[in-house]
Length: 469
Image (cartoon, rainbow, N blue to C red; front, side, top):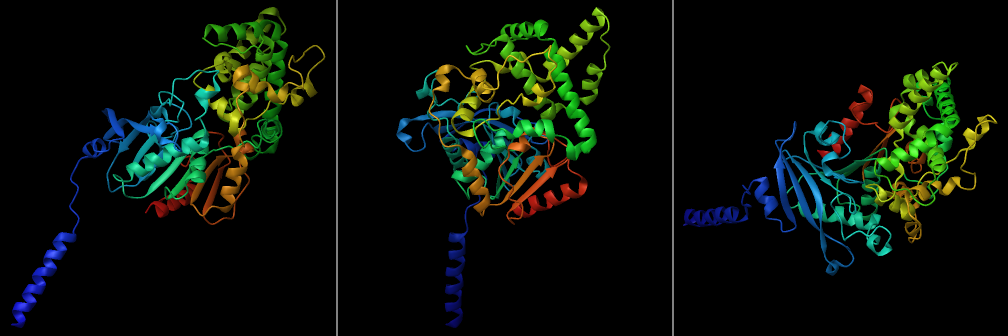
């Protein structure tokens, strides 16, 4: 009798186990993606490290606070390794998901280093991810270009794809994409397990003055040592003055080459104002990416005693100048106009400061742009009068600053100490256990995990592996 009872209990227990054991999901990644109604696969390919790469569109709400307003198609790119691997989510700040911020060639650096999946999301209003038909000078066309709406996009993508990828999630991005990573955490904390913004700035005003001071007084100090860094900064300044000496010949040429390249300039932009502003931006661009001081010194050291030598030196300087500041970089209604609209409305920007150049200008050389024009010149170059009338919102700087000082979310933050954008970062929050800041003293805006010294790289990798299991 007892045996029979035990048999029945055992049988019931076995049946319960069978009923409670979840059914294995043997569907392929493609089948699982197709099962999600908001996702459309547009093409498939592969890459060096990912056997399957999917170009996708995601049905995204135009206004996350009012879904009834409708949807638009937002571009995504998915690099697939395994369902058992974590997911790296790249919150793009710009367009072209296939060209997202990375340091491993075709793939995101962290996904490459951890050997896991990645998903990249094109920012709304960039590339093909357009919530509506854009009329450049119509404020109504741009009302949904906000950091909150973009963070809502990220939230929807993560919420949907977590049904497929159930391991740990990490959000990352570089430069403006790093800004979107931090904004994502501000609006939707807890959506992912770790945030890793690279070289992410946040300007403290629409006319942030910190960058000019950095470019002329501090850039390169940690990378080259204070003495050598000061020499390079002085050479950059000498080059800027030399280019101003060539104004009469080069300013009209520079303007016309921009027009020939397809640029449409604002009513504020004369050839002389364009030229002056490009000369200031040369200093920013030199330190941000290029640091071609051997080329800089080669140009400055060319002789100029004869007409032929003067012409040759002017040509060499102009060629080097354009390699850093192309004349069509400053046109209206370009692929980067959404960035300038965001900067004008809630992100802020750095302002031009010609005081350092004015201090060393010989009497025979002039600047056309006046001190009164400096702070607003960048926006007047990049935006039309109609766009400059768009409503300005509260800047994100204070919000991000406060978030980093109080959040319990986990962060690994990467900077390069020679980067001009390093000067316009949020306040230092070193000392918070959940926020790990790493500054690469040997790199500018291209700072990444792989180019840290081996011991620091090992520390970062250890934290990445710990957070991501």
